[in-house]
Amino acid sequence: AQSVTQLGSHVSVSEGALVLLRCNYSSSVPPYLFWYVQYPNQGLQLLLKYTSAATLVKGINGFEAEFKKSETSFHLTKPSAHMSDAAEYFCAARPGGYQKVTFGTGTKLQVIP
Amino acid sequence: DAGVIQSPRHEVTEMGQEVTLRCKPISGHDYLFWYRQTMMRGLELLIYFNNNVPIDDSGMPEDRFSAKMPNASFSTLKIQPSEPRDSAVYFCASSGDRRVGRGSTNEKLFFGSGTQLSVL
Image 1 (spheres, rainbow over the protein chains, first blue to last red):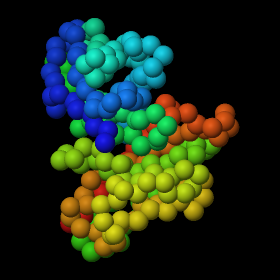
Image 2: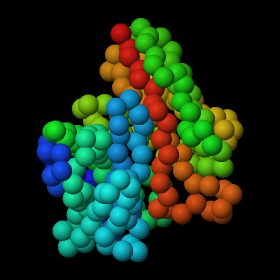
Image 3: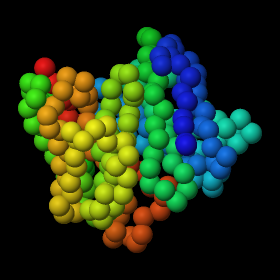
């Protein structure tokens, strides 16, 4: 069964510092991979998605993620954190040909002024 | 489009009562999903529909939970009888767009704002 692991339920960074949120998937066949963001009292919104076209994926709000098959990872990064980036981030995976999406447990990002 | 619309936004009920959550997906989308979010378990897929037909309900926790999709623009998730452990945020999401052909498997999910359910 597909599973997604996010290391660190809480991450704190200073404003302007690098953001790194970790995600690993377990699957013999690389699935489609996604990062979603959830702001307080809102539903999830798509940040970016990996669809095998390119290993480095750029998303909205300056975020990007790199797919590394050898490490079964899809870590999310942003060079410089902004206060508005404070939210909860979810990594998700979907096997090709299926609609069932599995989400990680989420990482809450705190940005310190 | 107004996005995925869920109602009510908040629901507080007593144990044993019936609870009905409602969802209106984005027009033209042919997949609809119900998720439950809790601190302990994160986001869990309960059930999803394709063209109004339930495809996978393996995530539905118990027989107390049921979901229907009578037409392409409406779905309900019912809990009867409700229990305190059902307290969570329930999200509806939709994907796919029939207007541009068969949906691809890399399409994103569009989430509603959720229903915060508290069972006392």
